[in-house]
Amino acid sequence: MNISHFNLQNFKNSLLFVLFFLSSIALKAESRKDTLVTVAWHDTVRVQKAQIVDLDSDDTALYFRPKAFQFANIYQLGKTTFSKKNLPTLGAILAGTVALVLVDQQITDAAQQFGRYIHLDASHKFQRIEVFKVPVMDIPGNLNAAFYFMGEGWPSILIAGSFYGYGLMANDYRALQTTSQLTEMFFTLAITTQFIKRISGRQSPFRAMETADGVPGGDWSPFISPRKYKQDVSNHDAFPSGHLATAMATITILAGNYPDNKYIKPVGYSLMGLLGFAMLNNGVHWMSDYPLAIAIGYTCGKIALSRGRQVIPKLGHSNGATSALMPAYLGAGNVGLSYRATF
Image (tube, rainbow, N blue to C red):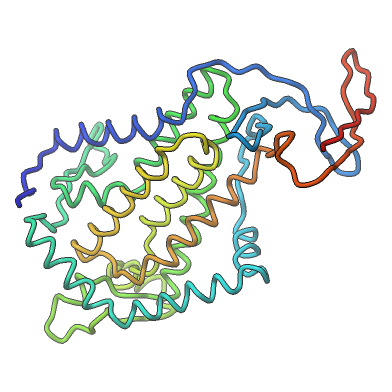
């Protein structure tokens, strides 16, 4: 088996196809109309524009137009992570990470051996793209680098841009909220993963294996100084994987906003699998760098999904009978009451 033949044009065509597929499978080719709804605001309610969208057979959602700089804060991520109900999950993730640390070197050796068997070039080959002599982005020069590129952030940024353009043209609040949520995720993940990387200071596999006396599984230098970290980044930034966290958060947001599309998760998770293998093959990450990264990405994605929309179970799918008395906007500046009963 030989898959070593790869060139820049192959990558461009593959990237365009993947980005088009991931974004187009979610978008609806129709312009949506605004409606007026009442939402809680301080101690009262206010009227706000929204769009009603059927998410799937069970749920409907109200999507509101995003506000400027509608981003999450790190406090919300910490509050969710260390909440009482999530502590068992956090413990399981940390336990799994420790177990993988013990066999990291063997897993990495096996992954790289398989990469050599299928002739998958593990070298970190990239070609820099410049505009007016200003570096813009690095384009992969081989297939392994192309898989690695899927977690770089650029694919997620391009997907967010496609949703933003579509949302403006079609007046689609769901597409605009997807862009806002992806943007929020970029900021939250960048701060979170960089913070953990700097306090853990884990050595990347390719640095640990450069010399015969390298530490199996990589060395750890907790709480490295900012200056020393910047001078030798690859010797201290392996844990956790920001690439895998970004990919997981992107898939979580897309699948959460478009649950009726059956392709987002299988395609997205398959690409994540290729990304994870590529990072073992090129020696950028250890397997134990992945569990926490996936958990962070999933949590950030879920937090972002909670903003700018309100999910409402459809009639006939709720458990038991419920009723509610709510203010209602009657038009012409008049406000009244509405009663809703669900059986």
